[in-house]
Image 1 (tube, rainbow, N blue to C red):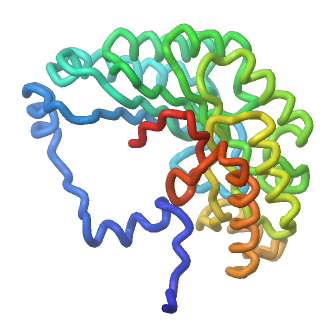
Image 2: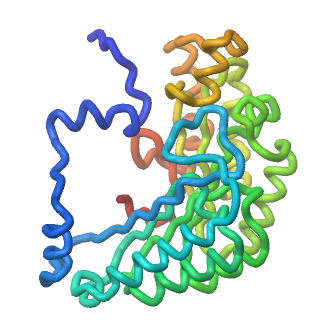
Length: 294
């Protein structure tokens, strides 16, 4: 069977899925009325977006912008939203299974800003017995006080944007720290953070070798990380990478055979000892990790 388009993740296949499962939009009035009703006994999740980063990855065109100035007003806005919706029956009578702070970089806030936000979550939300409270982060945005704040207020999972351990790959993706520094910081993070540490890996950058993909998998196992998302490089219109390709500074070729070899090498190495398994299309998890997905 021949497919005209290679869908690399749920991000770029959502348009196709939407044809069969269209989104239903509600008015603000309908939304608020729903919050006043007796909540149904179903899994519940909250997503909070932080559209700011202090450093932009080369491949990224998500809803984010380079940080300039203070985030006091945005932090206060998030606090006010939790306080506003926390008064509704929907949150008062039922617990929440998943809270996910994405971005952007949710740990870009200053320590006092982050604490105000986490306090507002705890003030207004009841956690279920086996809840997941995740913040996306980079390594350079963390400090000891932020880690302690997350421990204190119930954050139990961090999703760290690593993308590649290779020095060459990290340079391509515009990541902070060398391979060795990255590994050392992940070791320190696991020692200080009480919850699961998970990472993102993006494979198929132009000069990547099979050995690089295998090395990434070996490091994940050695560090005993909770899970790894695993995406093939996607060139998004509007990203720095897309502009570099147009300006012929970077050459990226679609080669499905090479892409499959990189994918299979990573999966084979990470799962061969039976400690990790393929949880979904683009995620490999440790067997003892309890996963709740939005």
